[in-house]
Amino acid sequence: MISGQLATGKTSDTVILIMHGEFSPLGNPEFLPAFEQTIISSGGRFSFATPPLEGPVRVNFYVNTERITTHNILRSDSALINYYVEPGDRIQVTGKPGAYHFSGKGAAKWQYEWEVDSILHLFASRRKEYADNKAGFNHIRFNTDRMNGQRQLLDRYKGRISETMDFIYRANLRTGAYGHYYTSVRAGLRGDSDRVRQAQQLYEQYLTNISVDTASSALLLLSFYPEFLLLKEETDAAYALSLGRLPAPGIYQRISSRYSGTLRDKLLLMSLDREVSRSEVTDSSFAWLLDMVETPRYRKRLEALMASFVSGKPVVDFAFRDRENKVVRLSDFKGKVIFLDMWFTGCGGCVAVAKALPEVEEAFKDRTDVVFVSLSVDLKREEWLPSVDGNRKLNQGTTKAYTHYTTPSTIYLYTAGTGSANDFIRQYVPGAAFPHLLLVGKDGNLFSASPPNPAHPDGKEQLIALIRQALGS
Image 1 (cartoon, helix red, strand yellow):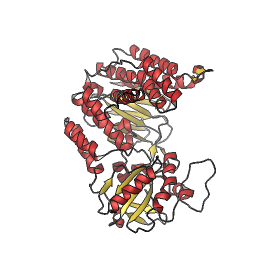
Image 2: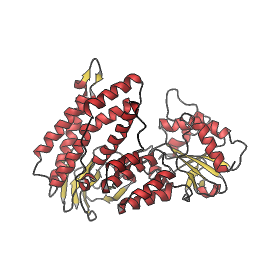
Image 3: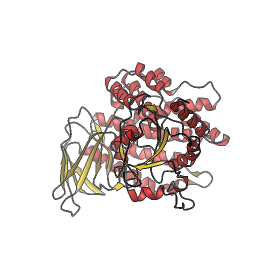
Image 4: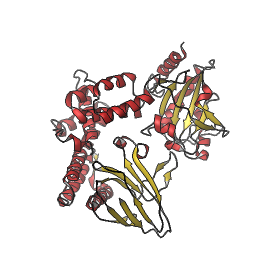
């Protein structure tokens, strides 16, 4: 039970509790929740009767239920994000946003996390102190000091929180302590020769022979530590490749050779989730994982993803609105190949795709058995319509609209106010990462969950070739 009273001065409020699903960290937790409940309270009072818990879970607790209008995501202002609850907790929350007080069984965890948030805000306000006149902002010193502040705070909570939570928090700290190094190295290895060498030196100074904790995998699954392990494997492979060594094995093979049991299966599914969110998943990935994954709950998730993203699986029907507000369904295009581009206004990568698509459409101008569908997840119709108005000129220097990339043949649809929370989007873009592309065959079945991005090098030519393959020509 989580209960309390909001001192907002209103007679009623709406509060939302979202309990994270296991793979929520890879996207917005709202799109993969284990449990979600909205309470309309009386006099500011609220209570959540949570489902039975087998162990700690992370929750997001929202007081301000306003959404970001572009794609219907809850705003995080004054929210409690990534707070843990344990079986038997009865946490009382009093006060108002910015001045909460926690009491009751399990409250020490929330007080600790509240103080961690304060530390993060403090360091964010002191960023100028870490400016280096010669090298710019000193990310390493900044992150190291911030992690040390969190570690000292956790030491003061020793004995006030359970051993399980102490372990999880320390695993999370370990993630933060090294995670920024790995992130910096990955970014540098994609740059020019000078940046690559700097990244290699950073790796050699801080990341050589980092030990990995796999002894308590059951607890590690509840922390952010698996994400750190996956980042480590990806960075280690990129570093080896930058030195001109033999090409490293694929990420699935690396994970399988270094980990075992439940933790291995968790890392494999996390890597699969990334491929899905990046529109990079292939049928061969699913086939390989089906032979490897043994943990029942991960096999169940794997099979659920296969039902949506394996070629030949039926694509569920949708009912969206066009510019004249008429309902358009997937089934309306039966017998035609469908290229589906999902996006939102303000997304730079989405505009890059739209800019490249006219040349692809031009290649099929004489074909009546292929359609190009542009599906916006903009929450408001009045925001979407200007973005697909071919008569409206785009303000110079902005990426806020498609406008000058529209084509007469494109079919423009939007999710009719449901945004990214639309059931079709939640199924086919589970991480809410855009742009996202799909290619549907004439039979209404998925032809490719990862068609080439036309904005990438050689992407237009590759996409044209794949559509021709789907057409059988």
